[in-house]
Image (cartoon, rainbow, N blue to C red; front, side, top):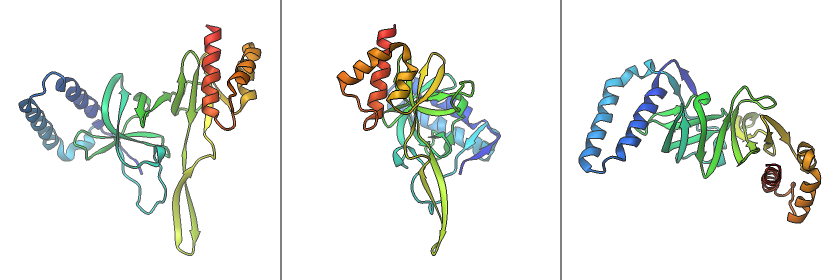
Amino acid sequence: MPVHYPTKIVLCFVVALLYKTVSAQSSDSLAYEAALTNTTNRFYQGVGEQSRLYNGLVYDSYDSSIKGSPYLDDIDAWRPGSVEYDGQNFENVSMIYDLYTDQLVVLLYNHASPIALIADKVSNFDLHQRHFVRVPNSNGGIKAGFYEQLYGGKSQVIKRTEKLLKSTSGSNGRERFFVPFKEAPDYYIKKGSVYYKVSNQSSVLDLFADKKKELKQYIKDKHLQFVDLPELALTSVTAYYDSITQ
């Protein structure tokens, strides 16, 4: 489970990773890479046991006895992604997304220290060819957290997926396992500055009531199915609404 320490390690991660990303573009020489590696190694030797003096979230992996996976797409392995963190963009960062704790976790530049980024400093990230945005506390009608952005035009369509840790007691003792929080994810459409939860065709048409007639005809012409293909239907209708209200 994630453990919080009053340290500054995330800030060091940001500075060092940015330095490596920018500087590496200026030279491809073996000598430069060797010097950079040496600098990084000296940093670790200098920090050593004092790492807890830096501010951040140290992330501990789950007990191996827990069944299932808490991670996005049930993939426990680290995958390269990109993240906008504290106003800076970082590419090719090894990361995983924990759906149980709603944390974006990255490997520190020594590839040995998993760090949960401070959520409120994450604007958005890309992982597994999917784009996620951070919805802050100030947005009414929706709780703060990471949401997958399915459509990002004038209006927005976002999706919330969560995991739950359950436990049972049986003949083999107590067992714990991760399961989806709900049978189906929650979908929201942002209209103006407010997010509205939508679940079917009727709720979408009610939200876009000013163009209801046009949207009903569009749904019919495109044979959109909100039950079988909800994400395609939601994004298509929302994009069409934007196109006829600009």
